[in-house]
Image (cartoon, rainbow, N blue to C red; front, side):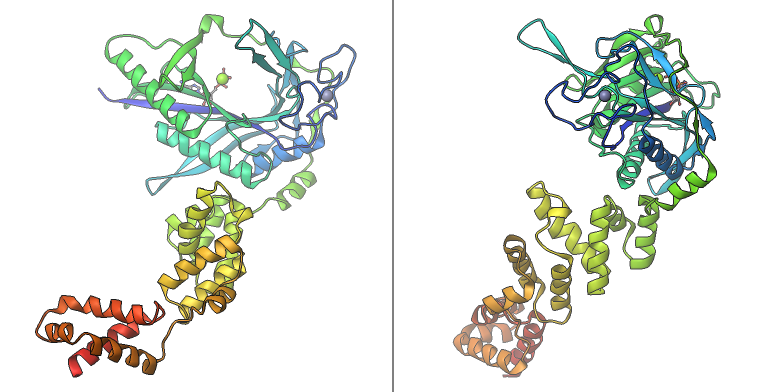
Amino acid sequence: MEYEPIIGLEVHAQLLTKSKIFCGCSTQFGVEPNSHTCPVCMGMPGVLPVLNKKVVEYTMKMALATHCRINEVCNFARKNYFYPDLPKGYQISQYASPLAEHGYVDIELNGGRKKIGITRIHMEEDAGKLLHDEHTPSSYVDMNRTGVPLIEIVSEPDMRSAEEATAYLKRLHEILVYLEICDGNMEEGSFRCDANVSIRLKGETAFGTRTELKNMNSFRNVQRALEYEIRRQEYLLASGGEVVQETKLWDDAQGATYSMRGKEEAHDYRYFPDPDLVPVVIDGRWIEEVRETLPELPLEKRERFIQEYQIPPYDAGVLTSSRVLADYFEEVAKLSGKPKAASNWIMGEILRFLNEEKRDITSCPILPQSLSELIQLIEDGTISGKMAKDIFEDMYTTGKGPQQIIEEKGLVQITDEEILKKAIEEVLAANPVQAEQYRGGKEKIFGYFVGQVMKVTRGKANPALVNDLLKKMLAGS
Ligand code: ADP
Ligand code: MG
Ligand code: ZN
């Protein structure tokens, strides 16, 4: 029997606003616990929340980037539950009328494209954070995160494999970071995902019972958790069992999911409209203003790079993985007029050197101008590819331009035939026995001569010219 997985994701992204969603407290991460709090985010009686306009604007950006319809009027609702990190006893979220609905993103997988539907995008506040002391039976609560703005992006159950789910998640992540509305840090929890998964027999139309997976803090873990859960459900059904609806936690160390709560313990949140907040009315003019500010998005940039610079899709994918990297590439491509060479240098040397030091392109010691000069020096034959690699290393460590390094080290390639002929004559005169062997048919010895000429010229001879001249001169004399 062949089963088909059905997956839908709920993604929470923390917005990069300076202040919280309903008060003026800072959203800064990693500061003294409970230092960024006030009566509003502490949920004191009698206070009134006031909506941060930037939160609406950022959510609109994401809505537009994912082809959602933005509702003219949306409302906030109270989601009631008790937990020590939630001082009010309810979370302000959106329920019946979210900010945006009915969107999609395109994912690319195995050369094909697929649309994944987005059900809704809504705004909400984050809860606080509990810190459990390992050494004493105490827990502490930090309210700095209370009231930090989040958006929740709920997908349609459109994904059919763990791979598709990961591709979708990466696409959302990429868009959020491109829009500069979320830092995308999964380890710090600024981008997190709950995965709903069920399976059904291939060909069936009804969905099976789903489980919801939580606690996966990397793309890899989302994929692993889903693969594990799909296999678990398949095994269960194939052996005559039944999937029960439950919420499960992913245990990274064990590589398994385990039950957190069943359907019986599922919350009834008793949602109702928050009487402290007025409806949010978004007019068409504001939507158009926000649309104007959208940057070129990753997928469009990728396509443009393939068209405009004639580089392979793989290159375009790597180079558009971040906006700053894409900008860097474009500058080198334009300055040098050699996009493919620019791509090779960036994907090869630049990223390798940066990765070794865990740096990103914004702190690259080689400026686009310098890299494009290096590319031009290879193109016009001033230096060989081999020399360029060495010069590159010097450029990276010293921050100097290629010209300066070439001058300081006297590295210019020798392309003058007369000088090269002299060097070859010298080598042939010093190696009469080997020259005889070559003429006698031992062609393998050719490489030896090339090496000797390089040695005499201290690596500066143009290799192609040396090859040509050597062949002629060995045959001739
Ligand atoms: P809840 O808010 O209770 O988690 P929703 O109806 O909002 O429930 O659904 C949450 C997510 O679960 C959505 O992304 C949706 O696509 C997905 N989903 C719903 N039914 C299934 C199913 N049978 N199998 C897999 N995913 C599902
Ligand atoms: Mg859910
Ligand atoms: Zn506050």
